[in-house]
Length: 54
Image (cartoon, rainbow, N blue to C red; front, top):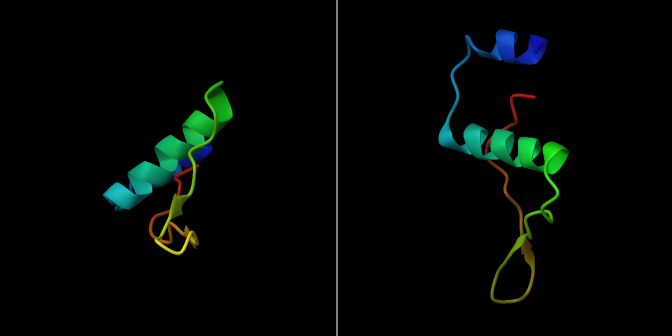
């Protein structure tokens, strides 16, 4: 809860929201993890933007 209070006064983007929701789903869900995106050469495309608020 401390992190949420600190981060409530910071600017965030849709990328941050994506990583935050992904973090919540990984911690508190029984769903399988989100698969990495792949390009045409079957190489993993990293999600390099955004940061979880947790």
